Length: 102
Image (cartoon, rainbow, N blue to C red):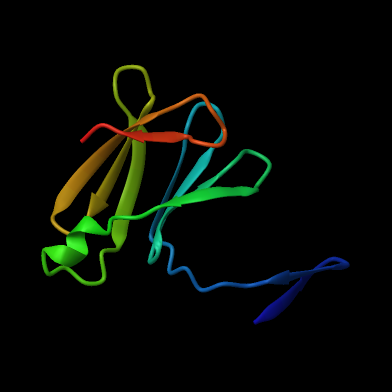
């Protein structure tokens, strides 16, 4: 429903967030029911990473459970989803922060 924050009215959404991670550039990654939500450092939602291929394999709903940032250079996003772990290389472009590698 609607919530108030100071004088501003905001719309609350039930995303069922399960885990969060922040990369070195300050981007926030949230594992949630619809997918991994990606927010810029200022809080604006940039996009959603979904896992539709799991639907065809009989998994429903394909919900990411946890996210973590790591790797040798701190630019790899790890996402656990169902019985799999996906890795993404974090990119420099704000409009496309993720490039799937696996």
